[in-house]
Amino acid sequence: MVLGSNPTTNDTLNLPGASCCGAMSTLRLYLFFPSLLPQLPILTFILPIIFQGSTLKINFCQWCGGPTKHDIPEGEEKIRAICTLCGKITYQNPKMVGLIKAQVVGCLIAHENKVLLCQRKIQPSYGRWTLPAGYLEIGESAAEGAIRETWEEAGADVEVQSPFAQLDIPLIGQTYIIFLGKLKKPHFSPGPESLDCRLFALDDIPFDSLAFSSMLVTLKLYIEDVKSTGRPKFHYGTINKRPGTSPSDIQSYTLDFHLQS
Image (cartoon, rainbow, N blue to C red):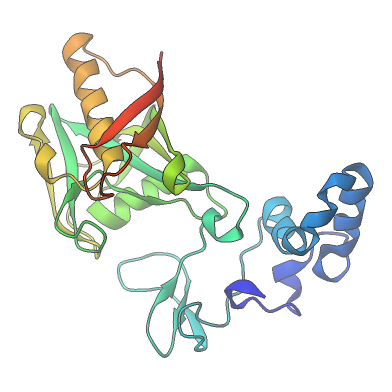
């Protein structure tokens, strides 16, 4: 069983009205979609997450196998599974359940013609700048995840205004969803995963020190919109790394299938 889940825990694997492991609901699904039969082992595990939204009960560390305790880590607001041996924290992201593309959500916060960026305190790209963003967690919407990540990384209480960009990165199986947001209060400070947080004028954004290609694309699109029309549009595109280039070379990409409205 992956993720240290306990197969005997009812609130972990049962569906409403189903017997242990959601067997009845799984059986009903196969009656209508027999082509799913080869996926039986995975679906038996994943169905409760998709249809019930239950929180996985993680009892063992996925790195060292040690027992976990369930507590709120410093600087966070949700209960997490924390390894009692190595101290690592397990985050329950959609990427953990195998069949779902990983979604990264975040906010582009504009304040007084400046953009809020965070300097990363973790790998990869330690010391480089990024919009506040991170993996969407099970049980939250994309907008809720973006608000949470902005609070965790920048200590900023924000209001989501509209979606700005959806960027697919097929090479690593990720989708970035970035929202436009505004500060409810003009206060921010670096969270546990940030060295610094700062408002940058559009002409002063440190493009040579950004963390990821996705951030480079997002900020360039935003600046182009603001300088050409005075207001942001919505953008969709696929970021493809150029063959033979290093993953750390954030400039080596093409933006394909670019749509805007």
